[in-house]
Image 1 (cartoon, rainbow, N blue to C red):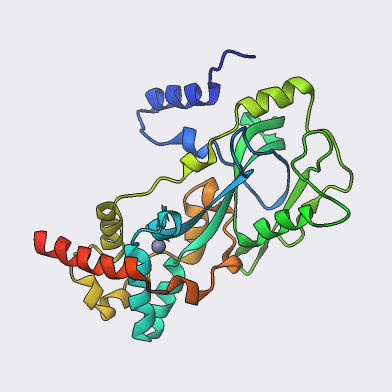
Image 2 (cartoon, rainbow, N blue to C red):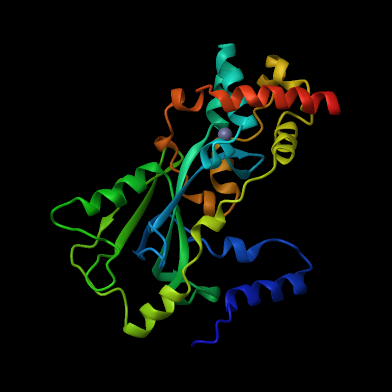
Length: 294
Ligand SMILES: [Zn+2]
C-alpha cells in the first residue's frame, strides 16, 4: 500500500468523533504495550538522515503525567529539578522520599515491529508497527550490549539482525526485564515489501519529546502540591511533606503504554539530579520575575 494514509490516525479521529472525547488515542496507540510475560520485537534501524536508531529523554512523573525535563532535553532551567534539589537539601525524610518519587528518569524510544500482538476481540496480529518502544535505563543497556557481544552484532540489521524478546516479570511491584534477550538466530526482519513499508512509516522519535512551557510545568507542580500556589511552595518544606500524591505503583501504570514499562531501578544517580549550574541560577532570577508579575 503506498497511499501514505495513516489508518491508525484516521481510526483514532473517528473514535474521537464517536465518543466525543478529545483523548489522544493516536498518541498512545503509537506505543508498544508491554505486559507481564514475553513481547517479541524487531528493532528497526535509524530513519534515513537520522544518526541513531533511538532517541533519549529525561522524564519527571507528576500528576500521572510524563513531563520531559527541559534541563535534560535542552539544557534549559527545570523548575522540577530545582525543586527536587530544595527537597533534597532540606534533609527531611519525607521531602527526600518525594524527591525520589518525582526525580528525572531516563527513557529511550525506538521504532520497532511487534511480532505478535493481541488485536481487538482477542485476535492475534502479526508484525504490527512500526510502533514506539519506550524503555528505561536497564533495558536500554541490555539492548545496546547486544551490539558489542561477539555472538551478536547489529541488532537492527534488516537482513541479518536479531529479534529481541522482552520478558517482563513483576518483582516487588515493579516491572523487571533482566531476562530479556535477543533471539539466538539472526533473521531477515521481513519481506522486501514489508521492510519498505516499515521504513517509510517510521515514527519521528524526536517529535515525541515536546517540552512544556515553564508556566505549564509550574502549574503541574502547583497541582501536585495540593493546589497550593506555586509562589510559596519553594519555602514550604512542611507542605511538601503532605504532598505524597502519587503512589509509586499507580504512577507506574497510570499513563498508559509509555509508563507501563517503567524501570525504576534504572534511575539516574541522585547526585546527577541535584547538580546546580548556571541555568539553575538563571532560573532563580526568572522565578523572582514570575513571582513579582503575579
Ligand atoms: Zn528536570
